[in-house]
Structure formats: C-alpha cells, structure tokens
Image 1 (tube, helix red, strand yellow):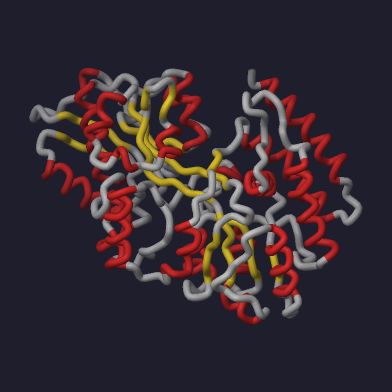
Image 2: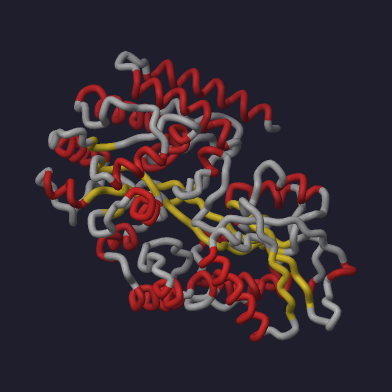
Length: 448
C-alpha cells in the first residue's frame, strides 16, 4: 500500500497524491478534433480542490500541446483516479478514456481480459524507456508484449525517528538491518517511557494482512505458491514474522498496549515523536509532516530489515483497446512527457520546490542509468528535505514483489492472525497459520 494511498489496505485509491478519473467513450469517430488534431482523453487530472496540482497539470497540457500542435488533450477529473467499484464496468462497457490510470495489481487482469491496447511498437519512441527499472517494466509486459507505462512506483522500508534513536543511545546513521536489530532497538526506545512505543504495527482494516505480506517478503517468503494456486503462509518465514511480533509485544513490551492500529494511527504517533519505527513507503514522510506536524529533520527511512525482499507497488497508464494507432502514439507521448521525463510534468522539481512540495524524497524511483542520473541531479539541485536521511534506502537494492492475487481477501484473512498475536498473549502461531492457510486455499480455488 502506498502509504498515502490506502487502496491496497482499505480499497480506496491514493497512490501519491493525485486523485481522479472521469468517464469518456472512445470511438473511431471522435479521434480527431474539428481542426484535424489527434484528440485523446486522459484521466487522473487533479480535482479543483487540489488547486496547485490542478494548475500544474493544466500548465503541463498547455506546454505539451505547444510542443505537439497536432495533439489535443482532453483531461477528465474525478475522485479517485480509479474507483474499484466502477473500473471493471467502465472497461467492459467501452466507457474508459483513451489513456487510463491503473494500479500495478490490476494490470494483469486488464491484460488477461484483453481490455488494453498493445503498445509494443511505440515504446521505443519513449526516450529513456530502456532505463526504466526492469521490475517496473515487467508489470506491464505479458507474452513479450507491452500494454502500459508506469507513472510511479514504491517499495517499503523502515521509517524511523532519528531523535528517538539518539535519546535511546542508538546511532541514527546506523538503523537496524535485521529483525533482530529492530527488536533490540525497539526495546531501547520503549524504555524511554512516557508513552513511547518502540515499534508499531497494523492489525485492522486489511492493513495488518498487508503488512504481514511485506514482512513475509522481508524474510524471503511468499504469500502464495509460484503458480498462485495455494497459500504459502504456513511456513518457517510466516512463523518467524509472527514470533518476532509476539516477542516484541509480550516479552519486550516494546509495541505498546494499544493495538488494532491503522496507518493514520502510526503516522500520528510518529509525528508526535512517540513512535520509534514502523514499515512504510517514503510517501508517508510528507503525510507525517503535513498532517501530524512531524519534522523532516527527525524522520528517516532505511531499507527493509533483512533486505531479502520488500513489497513493490505503484501505478501507471494503459491505453484503450479501441483507440486508433494515432491516439495510442499521442497517448504514449503524453505519458512520456508527464511522467517519464526528468524535468517535465510530474518530474518538474523546480516547480515542485517553488510550490513548496517536498523535493528530494527517494521515490518515485523509476529509472536506472543515465535517466536516473539526470533525475537525481535535478532533485539534488532543488532538494528542500534532508536527502541524507534517505540515502541508505536509496542506495540499497532489495528484491521487490507485487501483492498476491486476491490481495484484499488474503489481507482480510491475515488481519485476524495479526490481531490475535498482538492482542492475545496465548495466541498459538501454528494454529493461526494453519487456519489462515486453509482459508486462503479456498479463496484461491474460487478464483479459478
């Protein structure tokens, strides 16, 4: 779950901050404007309530159309960018925009149902396409064909409070690199007293199951078998996740007595200086600062403990299967300009700094090679946050995995497991995982 976007945990979209989506039909009859321009509809325009983002988006359309006088962009706004309640119906009913927003976890189903255009022959026209991280490109690739382009990506790490680390006698420049070290650090931070919690965890509203998944990946485990047909939670890795949490909660008393927490609870605790660590993506940092009066100076993010794996997610754009070749090419050009070019669109760091948005956070981190160097150079030039607090996270490569199939249903099952371990001292880990495994097996069987 991209942490400002809790759709992965509660079914609503957020994904970095842009909110949107409208409805529009595509047909061969409306692919040209009255003046002969190629006309494309695109969704995910920021709503009027997000005035600065809306103005920036409109500026980008004007700049793009000036650079491409043969293309006419018709933007559609609504909240959210992709509403899970209407997304499938819009696709099936032919009501989707020419260029439409999608979460990484929905891409495979769109491709499977043949509801997006194959854009393979256009991607070579995208400057820097070859520098996009392979794990991100793979999301939109099936059978050697490409069906979309990324907008953002995220991976999870360990957010921690540097001030509390210092008070507890820990070195804030050397965050924990294993779960054993997380446990030891949490114990020292909790010992500060005055309501201070060493390590915080989710266990409600599907968010507990989502975090269990991230922690399974950190242990080198998976949630389902490689073929996606069987549960893989009742394993040594699953038991290690729960045993660590149980030990911190009941043996060390480093997780606090209040449980059944959700993302906003931990963000608020972190902003108030009462929480030492929790798992999150970098987009949590501006939320903690903006909503809960946290300090960028005190906030840092480290790689996922153990570095065996982390939860990968993000969003991007796909293209209407009924769009004309001219519309697809125009749409690819627009996504390149708006999302895949350092210095333009969403990557216009000079404008972001001028608008007092945070510049210098480690994600979205889409590229490697020369394109990454160009983007990082611009970020460094206009940085207004302490980039050294994120350097270790930025520089450490951790294998990423997407969410499992039937993610929300699986998360609901694992919520019960997480809440049991964190609220019942006598919870039996083996029984909990065996029961969860049976439930997930039934979920996976029903999807076939």
